[in-house]
Length: 399
Length: 79
Image 1: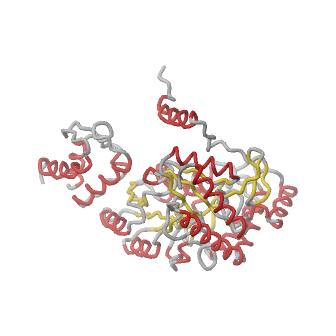
Image 2: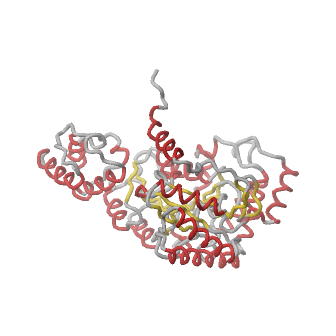
Image 3: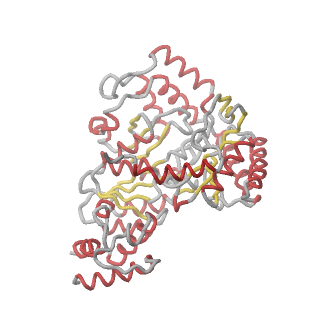
């Protein structure tokens, strides 16, 4: 019998070799208790969280928690059904209403995760004979959406406007075109030049989908994301987003002004063939989204945190993913996986959790320590974090 | 353009990516013989696309393993 697991042998070996150096496994950390959006207990030690995407800190908001508790009591623990059968409760409609208001768009469709939103919309909208033109650094859920569908898939170099335009112009006459972009790319925390890219996409007759997972709630005048910030949100056909970052729970969505949008509820398989979100989740999401509409102060503090941490790490001599802070993600570039794992562990010993990111998730084979800030990090915590980076950087031989 | 001329132009584009100077024949594979990783594939495909003003979608790339198959695909895509 051919062992179907043989294909994983190189990865198993890499992992075994890494752990044999005595380093803590960076991919099996347990949050034993969570004290707040910014502090948890890991290995019995109070740890500052700097890798959660909990950008606005809504996870412990009293109004959000109260809404969830009420829904648990009123509607039970789960729907046990698809949105198109028994799985649409009042709360699912309410959260879609909240999204329509948040984005000022005509239609909203909620999925069970952000991953499924990309999987569903991309695979359903772009069909056989259509062309998808997408950034090579797109998130796994976008690639998987391409794989699930039947369209021709044409990637272009990251944020390269000219490479995108050339490919659009080569697509055969009459073929349907979908350009897929992200507002913030989550590995390096850099943003896309959406204004120019969307202008070119439209000039070449393409529909445009923008994933704004990492910008909701704090980029753009109303927190609608990078497309809003660059004044082109009205040109975007589909915005994909998630509840698992700024909204503080789990779930995904697509908002759109396309007049035929509602038909997707019947033809989009990752929407139809799965159970809908539990009532407590949609209740917390709806409450959180409505609070995000008025989160101007939190937003300002989050940007302040991002600027201070970026400057602090740069002054210490770390190599960062962007030359200036473009989002609430700051990526610290590590020389290799071994140093990255060592640094990650040294930070954990200091009492700081960040994400260790490695290929294939990262571009260009990079190992990254990815930090995501929260509006609930105090100015003092950010200074503490910079001190932890300095000590850990020296201990791990990075500085 | 005939197959030989297309093959010559592709061979010239392979050269900068052929770090070990492997001899390229129709049977030479990109992953196996030339040891192209995914990043090299992306740059190489972009170079071919720009040279011939064509699109080689990922769906089509999945069918192309060897130099000979790439030459055939480019000839066909150029019509």
